[in-house]
Figure (cartoon, rainbow, N blue to C red):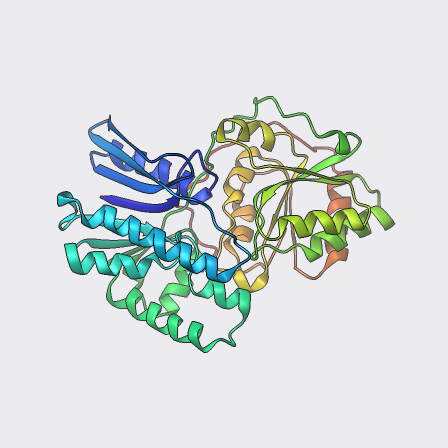
Length: 382
């Protein structure tokens, strides 16, 4: 099996972190797996025997791009997709092999189909983010090119992909509604990229939040993530409520700077940090009194915030600012964390009320030992 993603650890990228886990699991079952991705360092290759199988990891050196410039994003995607595809098709072992790919880098589906034509590989599409649907949600449906691209993408999904793996039932519904046979779609969830036992020493909060309860947002904060409700809700919490919470923002992405600036302008305590290496993630997560996860409604189903798995593993309270149609809502309802509050985007009063509820809860920061998420969790009854 060849497994293609974008950024591999230690570079930040949730898809690469989960792919590293998944590839190791596949090798342990006796498969020979070649995991191919990108690195900001020098390119390198490693090859290990794991259990009855083997895992080869290929890191191709690449530079980042300016995410605020669509042209740069598209050119970068084209270049890296060509390099990743060549790394597969140039190998003798790729003939009639399985090629597992994800939603990162975007539009790799087109290059995977090219690999299928050249090397007759069997395509397994592990959908993480739906493209071009993500761009349509970002820019609206007013672009004829995106509409045509969406139709072409659905044609390839139906005609060229042999099997789909999805992260949630919301994604499964989208595929079936798009004409994919239900027997071709398997729900296979990720798990937390780190094991959290509950006994990890929590990181010390930043000085700016020394007198606050910690609402932690960690990970990517991009165009798919709701921030306006968070800004207005936290401002209301400090203006009209107890003002107990401050936001610890360990994030990258287009909306991270906007979120920080909005909170500072509103006089809300906020501390900005960077995403941390995996070996420090558990300590960061355990520093939270509550976790914040957000999603804009138009991205429901086509994006699943991957931070939810690590948040669930801590059994800390979770506030989800996003639609109930997202599988984030279902996972939190089915989880074992201490307290969960869902807030509809555009309702800052409800967000402030959720923070007040958490501020009053005397079980805050319970350190019960968490269980891992059951990947075969069944959907709610309709």
